Amino acid sequence: MSKTSSGTLYRGREGMWSWVGHRVTGVVIFLFLLVHVLDTALVRVSPGAYDAVIGTYKNPLMAVGELGLVAAIVFHAFNGLRLVLVDFWKSGPKYQRQMLWGVLIVWAVVMIGFAIRHLSLAFGGL
Amino acid sequence: MSSEVPEPASKVDLAPGIGGGGEIPQFDITLRVRRYDPEFSEEATWEDYALTMYGTDRVLDALHKVKWEIDGSLSFRRSCAHGVCGSDAMRINGRNRLACKTLLKDLDTSKPITVEAIKGLPVEKDLIVDMEPFFQSYREIMPFMITKGHEPAAEHYQSPEDRERYDDTTKCILCAACTSSCPVFWTDGQYFGPAAIVNAHRFIFDSRDEGGDMRLEILNDKEGVWRCRTTFNCTEACPRGIQVTKAISEVKQAILARSV
Image 1 (cartoon, rainbow over the protein chains, first blue to last red):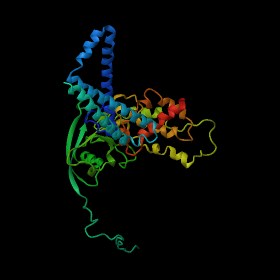
Image 2: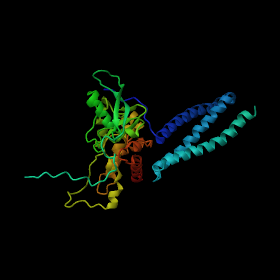
Image 3: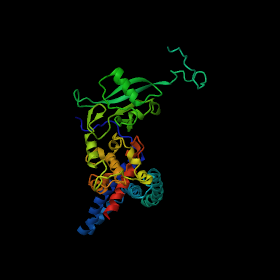
């Protein structure tokens, strides 16, 4: 007996892909926090070591990485509010699709603003 | 004794050329079926069938044509063939549908139409899966009316408003299209799944039923309603149009309202 039928990828709609996005960004944020707790904990070991590690973050690659991190956090945050509404607002399930478009619009607005400020600070001073 | 009576002329006047029969458009399709036969191979394979079908045909008709005219070994379930018995849920072009309710003309016939068994349940042969885990969850939520006290002397009264409360979830035909569309169920076969929760909802919100607390306790389990990640795949897959995710949310809220 085969365990499960593999085959084609299930063609879910907005709901399924927003769930995939929520999962992926959630894992990304978790990995960041793991590293973040470790590098911040270094200050207890020695302030010099902390400064050295934080210093290595000041490069263009990390600047782009930070942009990606903020993009993940902003999506996860606003989609999280959408999920709370889906579960607790009476009409939440009915308007879940519209709320996802709302999340993406707010995400885009926030990210445009952040990208301009962040990238000009990161690359403008060079 | 009986005199020959000519057949009366049709009372409906049709324009010439209409209703003459044989007027249904025909088209060619490729049906790509995921075949699996453990007696021959542990590997499932895709098999293509070129068919000429009518505009009124459904995916089930195409499967019948293959089975009856090309390859009799093709296995699938179907019974009523009219969207009521819930036997022929399958993954058509990557989405869970009833083969008997999916018209070929509504699909993209320029590309092969893929047909596979539903996901998350053990495949037995071709499009047939073992439904036992699905029905096991269904039985666990006790899908029958529970009342306390003596056997009633008269029928249970219920107002139309109270009946309306759970009307949506009475429509379930247990086809498993919802449960086998759920990403949580694919990876965690212990999850009760949307169909079991829908059928619990049907009794939890029935004013005559008195087993609501027991059912809510069962669904408050680690593998109960809290596994739901609101992907809405179930709502989209349901051939009866039940608002499945909404029903699950209502059960979640009923559990919270009860425990405070």
